[in-house]
Image 1 (cartoon, rainbow, N blue to C red):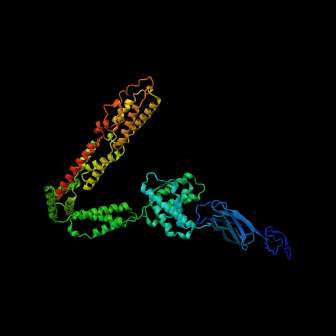
Image 2: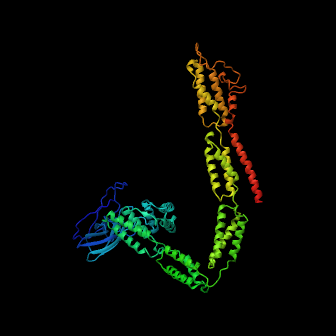
Image 3: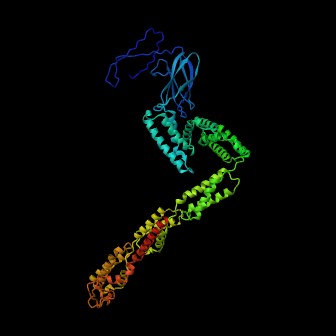
Length: 637
């Protein structure tokens, strides 16, 4: 170690001795050779032979197999140490080795790219002529099952799908199936035994069911390769013959292009589109169960009961249906059409010389008319009233038709029965709700704070929709009533700010330059605070005290203005007195002996008390509603 090869001319020698001297291997410190092995190869009387063949890609379709090294070894050189000749593969996998060897047995070995494919060998025997057609199969380093390979291929196409115009359900089903498939692939690559072939096949089928409704965007050789692998995995036994031939042709064309390294991208993309069309045109075997059941039903009909004319139509449709049932090329649409036509022919059979009894129809027709005459129908919802009108009209028409069929008589009778059965669907009493809606329309929302207004609007709109619904049941009406009344109760009147507004207007006219800085500053602070309260739109009547306090504070600040020395002020303070109310003398027309600002508030009670008329109307609605409900219940009893 390391190995050394020595060439020597030993012509005529009777004995050859190999002498190995000591030396260092440079690795393990062993400076002396303990043994030696020699191999003598005779190259006497050699002839130049040509050894040729090709590398077969095997299960590794469409890989680039050019440039793979092929070496020739002696049959006993099992360690492949001394190549006798070598060559490289062309793009189609063919290779040629020209070398001088004796007749005998040899081994050809290929060494593909490490990590992808295994080394492979083939035995060769040279007699007295060139050797050709040597086949060496290329084997992947890691073998994948056809199911796993197909699943990976169809998943590889996921990012090349055009979803334009595809319904949302199909897209969601496809994406969900792909997620499940990707999870299986990950598991299989981690541990091949953790996922069964059946699971892989089922995942592929689930993806393919929606994939067949999609369109692939061509994008070069890799997309075509994945689509060919996908198409090759389709089990054609599941599909009708129509379309199978075209699919096989397109698969073959796609494979040929993939082998052709000179094929242009445009040609490859065109082949991708054609293969996708062939896949989409495949149609699964139709479900013929319903058609076969109708055929059996038609075959069992007692032909003595019906007219020849109706039987002739039945025979015509029966023949078509039987042909479709036996047609291997028939699709689901053709099967459905044949079944519908045969079913219609069965229903249209006309009885021969048999009068259809209308006794049952007459009975229910008279019953329905009695209910209308008694006023029973007036209290029902609109749809029931309409049903009575239609059922009675249809019943009278069939009764008058001497040639009415059995089915027409039966259908008219059933409609009358349905109408009579629906008499318990009474119309709701909407009196309370109507009054509440009327009151709601009267409310001026500008007088109320913003909070609660939208809920009121929504409840009012919903109540109007229930009023307009002729089929609304009592529960719907009651729910709408409760929601509207609750929304009304939650409305909050704005606080009365009339006195504050007047006072702010007066205060704005005060010339503060006539007063001391200290009193003017106090007035400014009170004025700013009052303005802030006035601008607050969220204040309700429950916050009235806050408004009144702002009035008192501003009045006191105005009364507390002190004129500058030698100044006269603006005269607003002349004659001011303080009776404990906090109001200034200038406001003596509003003064009372009560609390601050109470005089003005009392004069404007109608404004702060706007709840009174609204709640009064509410009580009126509730009382009248209760009376109406009581009367209604009495009427029902």
